[in-house]
Image (cartoon, rainbow, N blue to C red; front, top):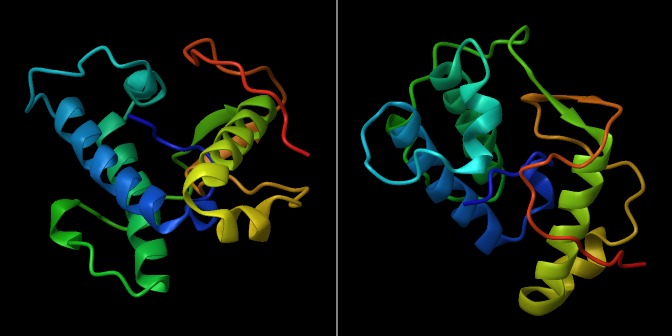
Length: 150
């Protein structure tokens, strides 16, 4: 399960579909509707918040909006949206954003070279709008280190 902190606009089509599916699974986990994945490290930042279910729905809304921009027909009824809630944000570190960008670049070298070439030179990586970027290191729940792609 990968709940990207980077903006979904960077994801290739396979990545966008995967994050939608995985985020819906995360929603079920946070709602207590599944037996598995309860301790998945990617869920920590949602669980540590005061409103995990509201936040995962908001996260899903940003993915849904990106899907509309690409002409996809994701099922919006799978998420519960009250409205966009600006004051509810999750903190993410600048190093985590950079790590995820590099992680995505590695994936794209294998599955979508065209997308890789489109985004490889981006200097300022936008987060998913749910996240506020702060100074800091890669999250301790990350498991892999990646060589930087230049």
